[in-house]
Length: 267
Ligand code: FPP
Image 1 (cartoon, helix red, strand yellow):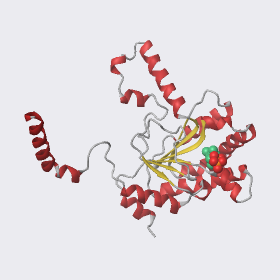
Image 2 (image 1 turned 30 degrees about the horizontal axis):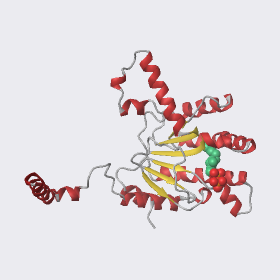
Image 3 (image 1 turned 60 degrees about the vertical axis):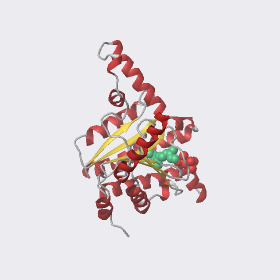
Image 4 (image 1 turned 180 degrees about the vertical axis):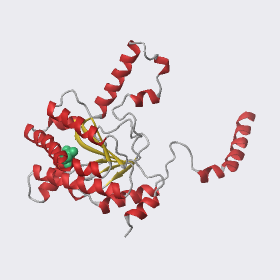
């Protein structure tokens, strides 16, 4: 078995890992339990994985806890998930802060209840000076909303003459996203055997490595995280370029291209 230390040594630089935590409901069903019990088991998995991420020295862990679209679930389940987030921080904030974790909560805040807004402020303020790891929680988050929010705030800057349209760049846009200031995820993991992003970090995922596992979120553990990290370590990230090995074959390519062009030119 590979130790957490060996895992950290294996990957340079260590990735920003984002997780779409899926399958609480199906896990509960498979155990003959209710959906809320599935979410409770999901919180246990969160605690496990946050600890594992710290042990492996991950710089950033992002968790997709509640999507904009999850609000369309029955009210009882939505309320339960909100209460669960409150309880998670009531019970764990002290320990998270002591471990040096800096918590950021991103998502649409307009329609959140006052108590949740207060909680978000409190959690972020209590951990803002920590630098061991960033735990970014996407709560009431959806990429479409985020992209519209960024477009509106850029438009506002333009109408107030703070920004000229010709100066808008990729960086300007990123600076107006809800994730502003943090690098994009390097590795996005989705549990429960579903193969989609479900409106999660659509802009930020442009060059993320994607990893899918059939394991339901409540069963996701250190071993599963290590499997994902080991797989990530084997991926060659080219960002649209070609690999170093291929560059060394450049001479042969140039030879072919020069003959090819000659033929075309003499036709
Ligand atoms: C997906 O399972 C999971 C969720 C919608 C919520 C994840 C939230 C938690 C684990 C706990 C609450 C958050 C915090 C920050 C403590 P699902 O219900 O979609 O499962 P299914 O697809 O099998 O029905």
